[in-house]
Image 1 (tube, rainbow, N blue to C red):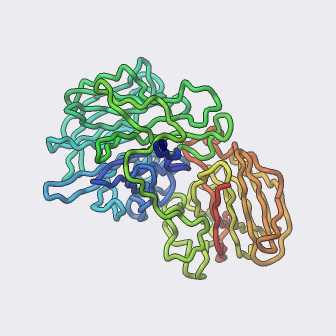
Image 2: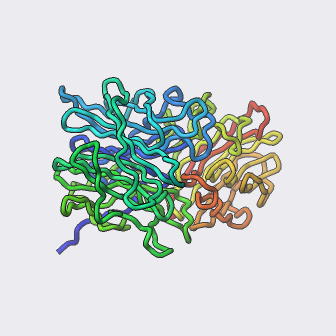
Image 3: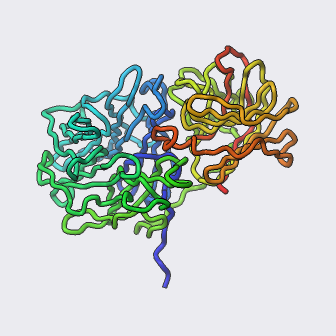
Length: 516
C-alpha cells in the first residue's frame, strides 16, 4: 500500500514573506511583500498549491508607484490579493497593500487587473491608518477592508479596523468599526488581518506576537461582519513559539486561507529556516499547511511540517527555471530585482547581445538609491553562484558580485583597477578582507555558501582555474537578526563608480545559481 504523496516546505523558498492567496476556478494566485525591491509584488500561479510559477509583478512600471528614497525594509508591506466575479461572469483581481516610509507619499493603495499576470493598474490611494490592508467580498454584494494600526495604549498594542469598500470607486466609504485588538490580554502586534465568510459566519484571521520567534496565527469569529468577534478557545491555531532552539522552522505566522474546488482548506503563511541558532539568511519564506474544521473553528495541528501530505489535487509541476541565465532574452527574467524605482535605463540586454550590460554610475549599494545592481533571492543554505565579467575598471570603479542585506550590511566580490577585491560592509563600515592581482580581460567570480559561511573565489583562466579569495565570510551579518529589517539575502551583479561620474560599463556574460 503506497503512502500519500508529500511535498517539500517551503513552497516558495527565499525571501517571499507575508503571502496572500486567492482562487479563481481551478487556479490559485499568490503575492508576497517585496519592501524596497523593484519590480515589486510578485504574482505566482499554481494548480495544486504546491508548485508555483511566477507570472509577473503587480508593480512593474516606474510610474505606477514611487519607491524612490525608501529605506531598507521600507516600501511594500503585506499585500492581499482577491478575486471577484462580476454579474456578467467577468472576473476582476484586486490587490491592496501599504507603501511604508515613502518619500513622495505613504499609505494604503489598491490595484486591479483583469488578468493576474498583468498589466495591473496604477496604485489608487486608500484612506486608513497603519499597515496590512485586506479586502473581503461578502455574498450580499458588499465589500469590506480591514487594516492594522497602533493605538498607543502600550508598546506594540494594535487594533484591527473595518470599513466598507466601494469596488467601483476604489475607495473606502461609511463608518469605521474597530473589531479586534488581540486574542490574549496584553497582546502585541495583532496584524495581518483577513476576513472570510464560511457557513454563514465571519472569520477573522490575524497574526500576533511580532514577526520574530513569538509569531503566531490567531482566529476569531462573529455572526455579523462588524462583530463582535470572539477568539477561538484553541488560539493560537498555529505557532512555533513554544519549540526549543534548533527547530528547523521558526517564526511562523501571517497566514491566509484558501478553499480548493473540492472543499479542502489550506493556509499559506510565512516562516523562517535558520542556518544556525536564530540566524535566517533566507529571510521569511512561504509555507503551506492543511486546515480542517472542528466545532466551527479552523484547526491546523499547530505546526508547519517540512514534508506534509500534499493537497488532494492533481499534481501540476511547471518547467524548471534554468540554473544559468545566459542573458539572451529581450528582458530580464522575472526572478531578477533592483533596488527602488529605476528612473533611467542603466541596464541593457541588446547593446552586447548575450550579455547583461550595466552602466557604471555614481550610486553604490551603500546609498539609499537605485544603484546599478540586479539581484535575485538566496533560496538555499548551501548554494554556489558564479558569473563571467568583462570589465576595464578606471579610477575607483568596481564591478562584480554582491551579497546584499541592506545598504549598511553587504559583501562584495569585485574587479577593481588594483585587482580582485573582497569587501565587507558591516554597520556602515567597509573593510577590505582580501585582494589578488588580475590580468586584463574577462574574469570569473563566485560565491559558495555552506550555512553561515560564504567563500569567495575567482578565475582568470576559464572554468578550471578557480582560486579561493580570503577566508570564508561570516554570513551572520547578512541576516535580519543582526542587520535589522525584514528581508533575506539577495545575490547579484553590480557596478559602481563610488560617487564619481563615469561613462564606463560592465558586461556579464552569464550568471549561474545552483543549490548544493
